Amino acid sequence: MKTTKSFIIIWTFIGFLLNLLALFTPFELPLFDIADKTNTTYLRMGISFQVASNLFISCVSGATPAKYAQILYLIIGIFGEPLYMTGNSYDMTQDPSWGYVIGSFGASERAGEKAFEKKLSLLNILISSYSGLFVIHAYGAIGLLLHSKSWEHWKSYLIMYSLIPLPSQLVMIFLTSILAFLFRKILD
Image 1: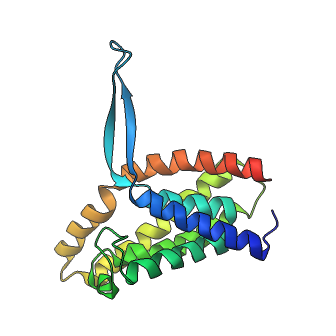
Image 2: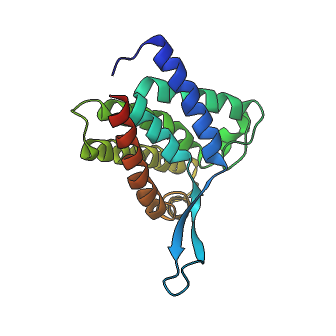
């Protein structure tokens, strides 16, 4: 896939818009009632699609547009809009979850580069996405450690910010990776 300036600009804005849309879209799985074929309920997974949109753009367009989309998203968050779970403005650096925000940049880089290292395959996209998720949680854990007053504090933060959302994120990243693979197939 050729990465021209116009390609980077277009995918940067697509990524930025996907990030905005993902903020307001909760991740829910449908539960079908076998007895009543008309009734479908949804299982709320407790997270939004923010991480998935970042990794999707990384795997479809590469590291550069994904990083630029994250930068735009961060700028909008700093200058007024509550785009992160802890709100907005420069004060968000004082929040324990700040490491996850920084980790999204590293995840864009890692997933975007890894997705284009080898020939396109679903396995390669899955590995790229999960490595990006690992980067987000690694940066997040370091940020939590720097913010914590004690090991007990750190462990409780780690449970709240990483371990509780992780199962939902694993499922979400799997589904998003399949979608990214299909998009790459279409674009190649």
